[in-house]
Image: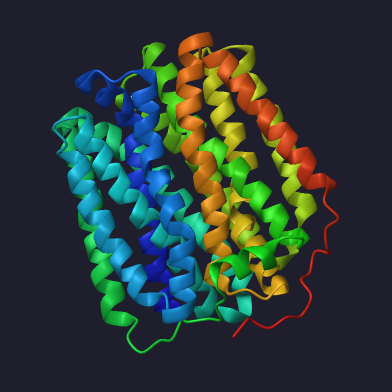
Length: 390
């Protein structure tokens, strides 16, 4: 079982590696294909659009049939989508590759989290939080590697590297997870959505996922474009993101180790408010030093939130009597909707008023959602005893 968990961490790592690879290379795609601000935002949001479409169905299928086959398929899709993006000759092909990646992303983060949860049942919160740490590690390694690989060997090199890693992990999962049942209970889609309503942990997790989706859509768009405007190269941008991701990994590992003790709605609300305050830095000035400081604070505050979001959703789902993967799938859909809308809106807004005031709009949204999370009548830090729906 430990080997299975580590391989799923590898799947999450490669999935997030492909997401992180785009960050330092987005200005290059913009210049090569002549992309507008809205088109640049569409490149970011394409993957999350697909995630929205597959998130809940993948969760329901995982709870009904089992998650291991879907996790293996996710790794294969990551490899294919990486090659499509790396060798894209135009905007249309790049957009299609991002859509395919979104299917892989949604499958990996839904079925993969369900696999980890089932395989590490006794320390579920810590194990699921560890998946977020693995994803953060990709954002520590890949922006630096992708930026330097692109500068040295061309844009496709970084994508070929990710494709090779994804194919290796997919084969490893296919060979080692045979005979391990990962199916949980399931409900019809509408019944699952009704059950999720009114459960404070689930509602808190969904609001938190909305915040994380806004950040996932805004930061990879606004920060690289502003740093490029400030005169930084792809390798410079990648290095800054990698350094900030190092703090992300450290903070995530600490929170994951705390397990259930960190999983609370109150912690989520306070963390979101802190994140909103951090965004005031680029609102004050878009100088490179200010942007770099924001990346550091964003990693410090957002990493714990990302680490507790899935355990919070899963525990809320158990209280509501819905399957593990279904609860995660619902959370992923909320994240995806926010992450789809944000880059397009932020790209258009940045074209009208500039990146600086767009950061201010993001800060306001986060502050409102954080206040709403704190207003929830939440349960205690430790979840009540419950059994999985079956």
